[in-house]
Length: 610
Image (tube, rainbow, N blue to C red; front, side, top):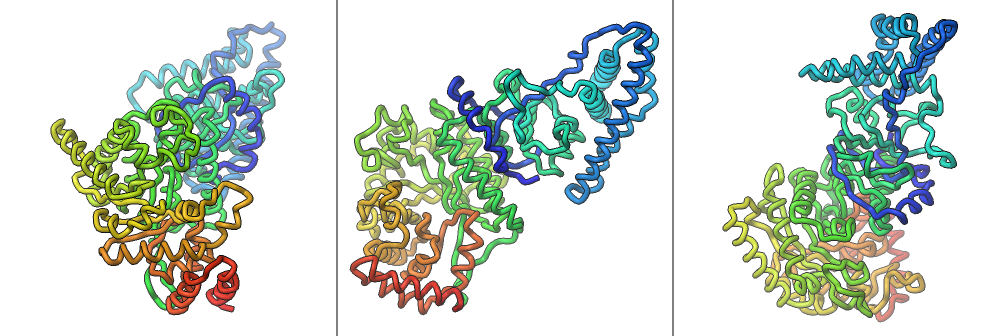
């Protein structure tokens, strides 16, 4: 199975939205078993053996119960056979043989005779007899300090429940009036193989459980089938109801229950990108190297906003994370995230980057996001109000907490983060903001040192150029910052006074505007003059018609979304820098976008090989 949600997984959103409107969203933490990201509605399977009530049957019904038992055993064995056949070629043969263990239990003479004896001697109903035998085995095995025996207890329990479900087909049915979703995220008490498939044999999108070992047969099979799975979620069944909408992020073991739409939108994009990569078979971990047609090396790093996207970047061969947007942790809950929660997240990002550098952009949030501890109320013009570093400096407590989390989280990374962790200041206007930030950075390092807390000692500090003031003062910023990042979408928006979310102005962002190209050229020259690295990111930056112009004015580093890497590599590989420089000069000299339209079209044909 893919590591992402399918289109069916998002169909029952009305149910999810209904649940979310009643109960506020929460975030639960567990232990990842199988990595991946899925979004979908919950279907609970909290069936317990104790539900098989101890009932007696008349003597003349004993034969009927025995026949039901053997028919159920036969059906269960046949289902496992079909299941194993369906997994052929999808999982390693050794892992598929796990199902043979269950088949063996269904033929086990001790198990069968124990159930039969309870029916014959105590006239128990079949359901009650199976429940008692499995419960007795379960209790004995769990008392023994032996992991193998405990796994057997789980396997035997699976077998018992599988048989009981053949006897009572409606045992999984939800409350009256609610249909079981076609595809769902399974929520159960224990990780077990029997719950990993619907009775029809189709696979669940993801699995969440309160308990279940990382080395159990169910865990092995979940990893083999790439079913995103998290276990060890405390009080899961108390917090999650049938029909809730959840985001299962097994990259960091988090479950977001009934999240807000802004959070869903971010994760849905990440899931879509993962699906695209999986569909194209882009699973190589060899580092992606970009070269122009004439052999010039172009550095490409990833642009990410959550851990699944970092995993995508690794799969796409992007060693460095050139831009990591940190807003998501602040959007999940109404309250401010703790320093420890932020630090754990940043540690996970650095670990997932596998030795590459990670540039964390500080929280960039204006008042439209309604983060109460950052903004008291929505401003009349949020985009030009307190945003980025301007907002953080007005709420230093928020800034200091994030900064400490970065320094502490970096030190906790598996291979350390000195030199790998970089910090970028968003929405900078002048050097005064950069200088004040550096003072705060010094103070927070000193505080951590006094408290004898391990922390990152060395990290570069850069600025994001996205305001006209930053572009005009690029030489000053380049002199004092360690590196520059250019948000081309934001820079174009502010220079042209055009809202990029306005559908009527979408054409404004189809190509880089000549005036914007001139401004960017001066920023590039400023960075080169001060021997500082510069990278460009944004949707506008990676559009095929724009890349040659950016290369032509001297841009040699880009931050690209992992899902866009393959197409971007093709574009760059077709560019001749000699031609690109000439075209960029003509484009920058134009007085209106219409004058570059023909140039864009002709150049596209040029680098596509026609």
